[in-house]
Figure 1 (cartoon, rainbow, N blue to C red):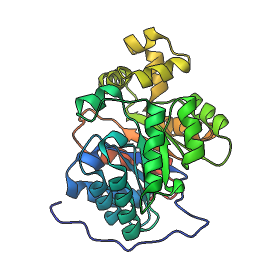
Figure 2 (figure 1 turned 180 degrees about the horizontal axis):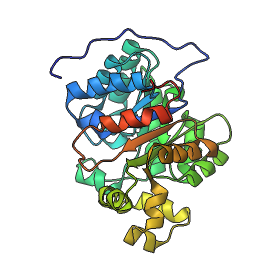
Figure 3 (figure 1 turned 45 degrees about the vertical axis):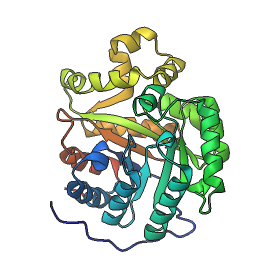
Figure 4 (figure 1 turned 180 degrees about the vertical axis):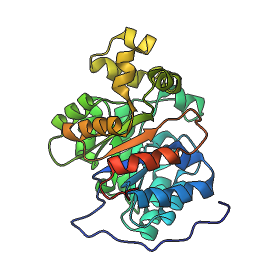
Length: 310
C-alpha cells in the first residue's frame, strides 16, 4: 500500500487498434482523489479485470500527475479525463501535459474536455463563466496553436446539447456524456452518425434493495440536478420539473442502474445497443470515501469479455 507503483512496459497500439475505446471502463473519483498507492494498485487490478479505460474527474489539482500515475500502473489501459475543466487549465500547459504523457506511455491518454458549470467555476475562482460554445471553441483553437498540439483524435468533448455535440463532431473524436439515459445515447448517435465516439457514463449501485439504492443515490443525484445543464438536458429527454424536484422513482431508475450484476449489465447493454462505443461505469456505495473494489470485482465478469472468471 505504501510503495510507489512499478513502471509497467508500454504496449503501443497498432494503427488499426489506435486507442481502442470499445467495451466498458470505470469512472472513479477514488482513482483521482483517493490514496495514491491504493489508486495505483486498483488501476492495475482494474486492467487485469478487463476494464478498457479509467476515467477521472477534474475538480482542481494536478490532473495530469494523477493520469501519469495511473498510466504508470497499467500497461494497455486507456486513461481519460472525464472531464478536464477548461477553466482551470492554460491551453499551452494542457497541451504540454498531453504531450508528456503520450511520449512516456504511448497512445493511451485521452483528453476529455468540458466547460463545467457556472456555480462550480465561480466558486473555484476560475470565472466569470463565459458562453460555453465560444469558450470551448477558443480553448480548442489555443490547443491547436500550441507548439505541441493535442490531436483531435485524442480528445473528446463533454456534450449534452445539440450544439456542443455538433462542435465535437467537427473538432474532436467524439463525445463523453454524464448523467444520461440510453435514449440520450441513441439521439447523440443519430446526431453524430457513424464514426465519432459516443461514450456515456453510467452510475450504478450493486444492491437489489430499492430503499438501500435510494438511500445511497438520492442525495448524490440531487447535487447534479441542481446544475442547470443537467436539468435542461433531462427536460429535453421528457422528464418533468416535478421529477427533478422530488427525485422521482422514474427519474432515479432512469439515471442510476441498480440491482445485481445482470441488472447492471442490461443497462450497459442498452447504451451499447443505442450506439455507444464505450460505457464507463461509476459505482456508488454507502461509504463514498472507500474504493469500491469489491463491487468492481463483482461487475467485471458480467461487463468485461476478457475478465478473469471466479
